[in-house]
Length: 231
Image (cartoon, rainbow, N blue to C red; front, side, top):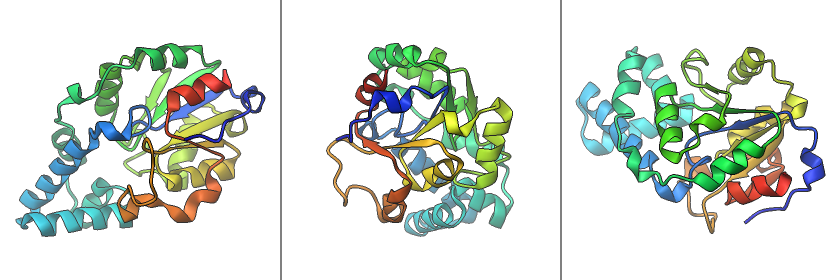
């Protein structure tokens, strides 16, 4: 699935900005499910809840605060370092190395960044397992964002300022349309990554982002093929 881009439309791009989870690796890999389980377990232990109540609260925090971590910090004043360490203690071998994507990323003209609501350690481990870590100039993680997740305006402003990125000469790749609202308003090109053979009912209701489709310039279920088409 893709609305095929015109390579000329990307000829001015100097900075390529990528979300990590379900963007640089396929949604069907399901790596995030491990993190999801650990977040539920963290809340269950912290608040002595049963599994169902812990999961409901986890998703409520995600909806209301942008990340489960932000909600836990605001409401329960947890230690973010402890949370990030525990929920990212996962098996990265679920990710299949993608040497073809590595070759394509290195061919992109200009700088390449990972911009994630996860932490740097998670990003480095995932990108290393994929074989693409050395394709990137730097990583902007949730710690660099002062623990304020996308889609907060201040988080994008912090990223742009830190790396002196001109948004009118950059493109953002994301698996959540809501996280493309601010980039679009800043003048960035926006690309939504969806699961292979995506169906509207595929994602859970809070991940579908049906109200944010106007923020998306391009949609693809194959990031590697999309990038090759703009080279």
